[in-house]
Every structure is written in C-alpha cells, then in structure tokens.
Length: 602
Ligand SMILES: [Zn+2]
Image (cartoon, rainbow, N blue to C red; front, side):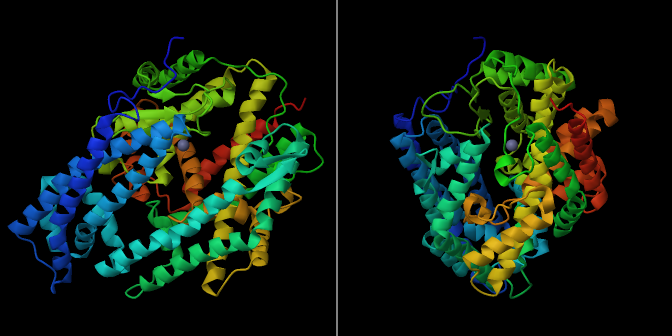
C-alpha cells in the first residue's frame, strides 16, 4: 500500500474524546453570546425611524461584530466537520451523535445572534452600503449582502422573523423529522425476508430483475400503507411555506419559484430556459432508456429497471493505489498541479475509502476551514464506478483547493455551481477509461453510466420539478389528498417519460426524501443545472486549448461571489438565460447517447 486509505484529522483533534472539544464548545458558546451582545444594538437601530444612518460609531460596531464572526465561524465549522467525520466512519458513535446535536444548536445560536445585523444591512439605504463597502472588514461579505438586499422586500419585521424561526423548530422541521422517523421504521419483504428501506434502496440496483421489482413494489406498498401520514407531511411543509410567503408578499409578490431559485443563485429566466430546452430534448433520455433495454434484452422498461446495473460478465477492477495513480495521471494531463493534488490528498490521509464495517454509505467531499483542507469520503471496493466516484469527489476537493486563500464566505457556492468541478474531474477520468477500455464489458459499464445519468437528468429530475410545481399550486387551493398526489406524479411522469416506461413511479412523492426536506423545496433543478453546466464547461476544454486552464480556475474561484448568470457571462461570455446555452450541453448528452447506441449488443 502506497497511499493512506483512512482520514488523518489529528491536526484538529486527537479523537472524539479529546478534552479540547468540550473546551472549544464552551468557548464557542461564549463567543456566540458575545456576538449576540454586540449585535443587540442593531435591534434598536432597526426599530428607529428613519433607520440609523452611517457614522463612525456604527462603523465600529459593525467592525466589532464582523471581526468576531471571522474568528468564531471557522472554529465552529472546523469542530462541526470533525464531529461529522467521526460519525461518518463510525455511524453508531454515541459521543459523535450527541456532539452533532450540540453543534447544530451552536450554529443556530450564532445565526440568531447575528440576525439583527444581517437584517439591518438588507434594509439600510444605498448610501449607507456605499460607505460600508469602503471598509476592508466587510469586503468578503459584499456579495452575500447585495444578494440578500435583492430580497429585502420579502423580509418581515425582526420580531416576526425571529418568531418564525423559533416556531419552525417544532413546526416546520417536525414534519421533516417525522418523515425521517417513518423511513427508519418502514419495512418490506423480498424473497420472504424483511428489510428496512435503506437495504431495499440498495436492492434497486440488484442485477436480478425480480429482486429489483420486489424491492420497488415493497417500498411503494410500505409508503402507501402510511399514505395519509406521508400526504400530511408534504401538505404541512408546503402549507407552512405558502403562509410564510403570503406574509412576505405584502410589498411585492413572493412567488414560490422566486424562493426556489434563490438558494441556487440563478434567475427564474435561467430556470425556465433550462427546463424548456430540456423538455424539447426529453427524447434523448428515452433513447438512453431504450438502448439500456436492448442490452438488458427486456420487452419493456419498468421503474425498477431504471437503476439496473450494466449487464456485464467481467469488469476490470482496481486497487486503491492504482485508482489514485490513474486519477492523478488523468488530472495531470489536463493540469499537472491537479495531478499532484490528487496524490497529495491520498498521501496526507485526506481521503477515507477503506470498506470498513460501521461506516455510512454514499460519498461526499467536505472541508475544514482553518487551515482550509478538503476531505473526501467514499467506500472503495475496486469497481470502475468506484474509480469515477473517487474522481468526482476529488474534483470537489480541487474546487476547495483552488479557493483555499479566500474568505469562508466566498467559499459558500450554491448547489447549482457546486457540481462543476466534480463532474468535470469525473469526465477527465471517464474519457480516459473509455478511450483505453480493453474489453466490451468495460466500455459498456462506462456508457451505461452516461445513459443512466442522461435518463435521470433529462426525464426524472424534470418530472420531480413538475410534480412539485403541481403540488405547490394544488396546496394553494387546499389540502392535496393522497389520491391527488398519486395522480400529479402520474401526470409528471407521463409528460417527461411518455411511453419509454410502461409503468410510472406513482408513490415517488412519498418514497423520495427530497419532497419532505423541511429546510428547502425544489431540491431537484440544481442537479440538472450542475449536470448540463459542467458538460458545457468540459466541452470548452478542447476548444479553448491553452487559455482554458486559467479561465477554469477563475470561474471556480468566482462561484461563491457572483450569481450563476454573472459567473458564466464573465468567464465564458455566454448567457444562461437563453435556451441556446443549454442546447449546447444537450448536444453533448445526445452525442454520448449516440455512442452508447452504437455499442454492439452482446
Ligand atoms: Zn458531487
């Protein structure tokens, strides 16, 4: 073994029992309280009419708050990342679980402490902001403040905002928790054995069609058995949001799509252009599904076939060391520094990939704040898909790395732009593997991934989006019954899948966690955005040649300090509010599907 396969986080804490953790928690509590005290005066400022004007005193008060925040936030972040990292590797760790809830409390406290200042800055006039921006302590926060000011018409008075936040704990968020609770107890039988939903989910990609069908039908039946509760959850979440938006609409209408695009840092025009371009090309997704069907030799495709694995007999496997060397080689061909970076990640113990017992499933990239160091988590078992997943996560890590000298706030990029570097890195490796594949099975495995991504992105994600729109529209007029939820799902599936599937996923509104996340709605369009956008960037790599690398790094560095429209206009000179931009990426998807279609069926 050349490389480390487990995290080394000693720089931060020895282990989860490290006495320093409790010391730091106490410190953080004190710091957060102190910030709250400094921020208190801004409640008075907010209540004053007219609003407090700019002068040296308010400048000093703001400086005190932001300087303190710049010390407290990274500390809080570091500890939180550390605690989560332990819980990821040792999912039953009781100490970690307790600390996670303490950390959540701490960030909520800090958020509330700072709230009056944030609200104040969204309400002051432009001349105040102009003076403020002359101060260096605020420069990193400018985009965040400007972006918040765009939504200032939808802000409520401070006491109402605070009431809403406080009520949400046992109101809005309880519904999300109830969903989690239910999904941890529901079960279904496959071949006479009883399984929980997480196990059933893994069976969705079993090579045996009958296992997949039983797992799918079992999951649907389990949720249908609790259909009224599941319906109550999505109705309550959306009912809450509708009421809140109504309150926020007194000065100017706050449409649910305005709220949906806000966290993605995109405009509604961009969302419309992307969805409309994708709708016209939904057939590409159908072709992907059809080609999968040909390889599977099925008469038709059912919902449980959409996640079937590639029908291959043998697959090339890789050791962890081989995977790192291969990824580093592919990265280095594009940019030598990026290649060295992949090696460094593995040498320093910044990747945890060993298939151990108590670890969680899935893969992700996170990063500590000070010093800014990325960490990658996944479970590496040697498959080619593991190699591309590792490349994907290392791509995220590279994004963190090229921004390591920047302020924390500039690193808060939205989900829409977060996938740019990861899919880009994944493609570098995917293309190398595809061009150098020695067997038909290896080619099929890679092309299969392309096809299933295309189907998910061009059909499934937009169907989720349309379903959610129908849900919200329906909820505005009253309670949406279980039967109506089923029929909205059927309609959305019919619109996007047409007859490429011979049965639709009618309880998807209940089986999919995403509709029951209390923090935000429309947790779907950013996936499509990230996928198409990163393909568009990747395509420019060969077109731009030498100039690409600098442009690419510049683009990544701006992802947290501009809207998506501005980032693309500045670095690519392109307008994402037009369908033409999206069509360009959709052409690439179509090309990949054509390649897949030309693969011989064995
Ligand atoms: Zn990702």
